[in-house]
Length: 449
Image 1 (tube, rainbow, N blue to C red):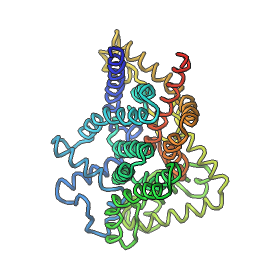
Image 2 (image 1 turned 60 degrees about the vertical axis):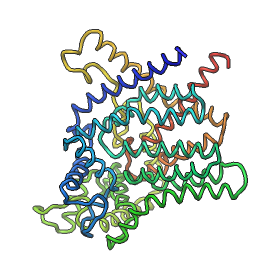
Image 3 (image 1 turned 120 degrees about the horizontal axis):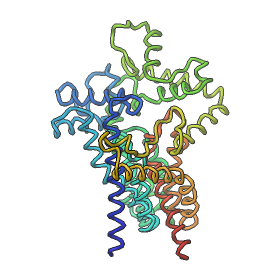
Image 4 (image 1 turned 45 degrees about the horizontal axis):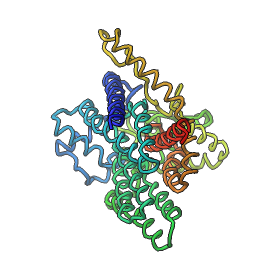
């Protein structure tokens, strides 16, 4: 018992140390566009302030010209308004601190919980240490964005999906679908994952077809029911209907703008560049407000999608290569990041994370050693995850497959357009679970088990 308590205490110390130090770094860089998406947060912040001031509804949009309000799902601006109201501070710092405090606990519990249910407690402890050391999770845990709560709900849904498979329980399948639907209220990215989950239950559950169909339909319909208010609102409010918020076109367009061939054919990367191009094309005066989603944002996004898809259709083999490059960018957590794919976090150091008068002595040495351990863990992560997938498939291929559905969803169709590593945090959470299974197996080999 003392040994187990000592391990849990060490895990807590590592997790809190890495998270606190990374929080200190991010608080110093929260207004630096190189480290934080200040432009995106400004849109959420403006909506949250409008909600508090009574200028915007929590959910309903009563002006069909406000296509900018449909760019993102409604939950994160509402959450920001709630945080502002409770804390009394309308700033990114207050949102950062609240989301960070919740994520310190939830990310660790969810990833370790999935690992425990799938592969046992030793794998859970290994996964816990890996997520505690993870620069990726530490950075985006201190990142006040919709990606953090989205990750909670996708991972929570994945846990229930795993339990539904193991116990053949319809209620657990419904719960998985509900949590996935809630995730879509924060970000639209996981929307079509419900199809993958439903298919996984249909194929992987052993037994008779009525049970397979019931559980598959339960997960799918639960997600559809939860997201249906947003779809119905958009259908009733906007003449140009958009079920997903009108962002597919801009992601395809800017994804092509990442490439040399795309830029040669007029595609651009960056909301400001695309908006300026369209402002000139529409003859919109330079002194009047104009952005990527207003005015007439839904129609404009459909035009971007049509032009992008036509170009991709002309160069399918080339674009498959582009997608492979993005896939590597989504997986690469060590070394220099792949351009346009976002930052995978920092290794903590005394210079980055401590005030000047603390950058010497035993504390600074401890921080630097912790950063070195993070660096080693980063380089070992992908080999451990690959080995863990092999171990999991040998141990129970159904469990391996049900977890891999989410990994492949973010890795393959999720890279069909511009994407960033912060969008795929649920995938990395599950890869940590597999890495934990790999560590568990290595420990077993060492102990002769």
